[in-house]
Each structure stands twice: as structure tokens, then as C-alpha cells.
Image (cartoon, rainbow, N blue to C red; front, side, top):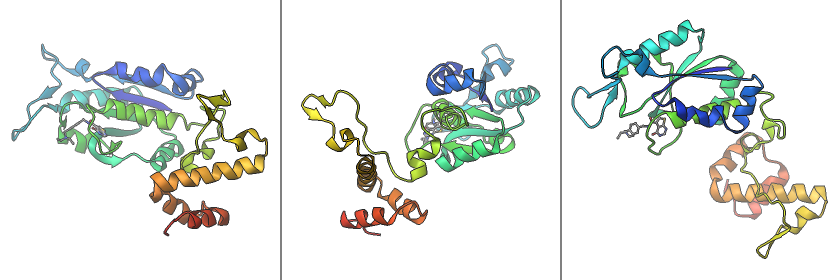
Length: 247
Ligand code: 9D3
């Protein structure tokens, strides 16, 4: 899988190309990432990529032409995949959309906005899809683009050895149970006894109930979704009803 990223700040993508699971997956040849600076596609003395908004208002707007020239270059370099741009008014990224990117198995072009946004005429002619990562204000599209890359790449088959990605919380539909490691007692706080017992059935039951509890407390909406997706057992439903769950 290949990502081509249009960005004024290519260094930010070191976060995914140089660090951790995504870096290892890149060394294994599972994906590649090329950054393209739209300043390189400008012709004026000051390499201008932004200008004042027509109609007035605060801040600056990214100009269409440097972005269009850059995507044209990316096309000529061989990436024929979807063009995704990032903006606060985009559609919220979900685990479901991330899995679709994997299933599609296509290259992707990412366009990162800075300033107040991108000229609408570029968006309407070059961009297939606008993505947000949530209702909070960031400084630009780069961290959302890194977020998308990280979320997608870690799900490429072979990127992760330890956990099968189907084991993860969004596949079980519940949040993770708490984790503990050595030492057995840290600052007078012991590890829950059941986890030291070696009794795998009890450990499984405890872990499941911790997951149900944390999900019920912090994300009750996920309990409703897990239930309607058939991800909850009779034992789960019994535990939930006993702990105040209202269907
Ligand atoms: C919603 C705020 N906008 C109107 C006052 C101004 C504005 C703020 C921040 C316009 C662009 C940005 C930069 N943010 C992104 O480019 C962005 C983003 C985000 O801020 N939050 C969540 N997801 C994303 S994806 C791209």
C-alpha cells in the first residue's frame, strides 16, 4: 500500500515512517510513504501557497493551483488511488472506514490543509473525501493524516505479530480491561489476585467483566452497539443487567 502526502510540513510524517509498528511494517515492505511539498509547485519569488479569503474573514486559505499541480505530479508518479483531504468539517474517521481502506487495497493520496482551509474549487475537483478525526481544533491536517496512516497500516496483514487485530477492542465491541505487569506489588498496590492464579477460565471471566464494567461506565453507547451486533453473550447480558444496564 502506498501513501502520497501533500504537506507543507513533511517532517511530521517521521512520526509514522521512523517510529514503532508503522516503521517496522515499512521496512518489511508492507507500505510506503512519499511526501510532496506544494511550495515546490509554486513559481513566484515568495513561493506563495496561501492567500486572503474572498469575502473577508480571519486567516488565510490554501490556494488551489499549487495543490492541483502537486496532485497531478503524484498521478504521473503512478498513484491512482483516492484523494482524501483533512478538515474539521469532514466525516469522522471510524474503525469501519479504516477497515474499508485495507479491504480496497488501493494506493491513497492525502492532502493536508493548513491555515483556515483549502480553496473549495480544489476540493470539488480533486478530492474524493474529506476526513476529520473528531470535534477538537488542531493546527492542520498533518496529525490527522498521520492518525489515518497509523490506523490503516497497523491493520495491514503482517504489520502486527502479537495480537490478531480481530482481538482488539473495536472488534470485540468493548473497551479493553486494565493491564498489569511486574512487579506483583507496586507502591503497596497489588496486582488483582485472579491474574496470578493461573486459572484461565477465571482470568477470562474477570477480564471480560472488567471490559464490560469500563465500557458501561465510560462508553455506554458501545454496549448498545455491541449488543445489536450480536457481540454479547447471555452471561454478558446477565452481568450488565445486574450492574444497572438499561437497554
Ligand atoms: C473549526 C474551526 N475553524 C473555524 C473557526 C477554523 C479552523 C481550525 C483549525 C480551520 C482549520 C483548522 C485546522 N484543522 C484541520 O486541518 C483538521 C482537523 C481538526 O482541527 N480537528 C479534527 N480533525 C481535523 S482534520 C483536519
